[in-house]
Image: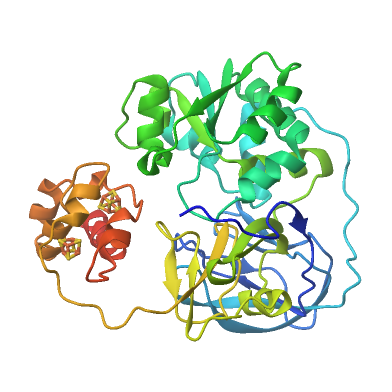
Length: 406
Ligand code: SF4
Ligand code: SF4
């Protein structure tokens, strides 16, 4: 599915949204309480909400006035209440420290949550894992068109390597491995040119096949181990480039997560852009500014990748911190058809479970447990392959939730 696209090599910084919408519920159903009220003036990067135990904050990406809360769609397709900030375009921000502090492991992890950076590092206290021996930086994407990680490394290679080194020191990790697709020659050269001063970081070229980007397979290939729920069980912690860049900005500029680099693509016109966008921006504004609806009669948005992502029926969906890409496609999806028992979802499943059979037994919790629904890693390959356009992954996710609640 490779194609020559234009506009993707650089980071465009084009978006100055008039309004920002920050959800008070995230895709993991975590709720936030607003700490501001209608009419308040807020500075850029100031705290505007926090979770129940005040361990995880949300921030304003702009300066401006708090307006009445309104409801907007998020990447899961749900419509949730959002804090609304009207931009005064002054970008007034709270002065913050610019020196890089040295943290203990605990303080570092707490700071990530406080600064709105959700990552596998936040799971360390929950899992209480054995000593972490390896940090795996996964740059491999099996999503076609999504190049934001690549562009981030090419533009901020030294910064990314510095951050990896910093994390290894704080968490006392002896080795970091950057997993790179073997066709990414420019990236390899770029990283190799900077890596000399970091003897604890190495590059591992991986033959890119679609399922290899799945963490479970990648870890098996590199370390020869299999895990049940998390790589932490095997002393491995994984991260991606966008998280590393957010950590770099936190460490270097004391900046919370209020902006992201995302890839937005219209494959029909072969245009793809990596843009720096404020979290809370409505996708419709981005599409309008880039004039990306061209040649699409009935557009549909896929949030966060063709395989793993979710289609949403409106472009009034907002950018949240979990989103790395938006793809615009022609909406050929008509009505969902019944399952034709073709078995394609079973053949494609990388963890060897039986999605179609699980769906058939969805009301029998014991049976779906026996069918090992807990092994599903949510890759979305089953939904992608299904000729009946059944949202297999979504259905499995909701069954899994029911099983957990039992
Ligand atoms: S999302 Fe589908 S293909 Fe992926 S692991 Fe789960 S059942 Fe298997
Ligand atoms: S791929 Fe779709 S149609 Fe085929 S067995 Fe799976 S759910 Fe049924």
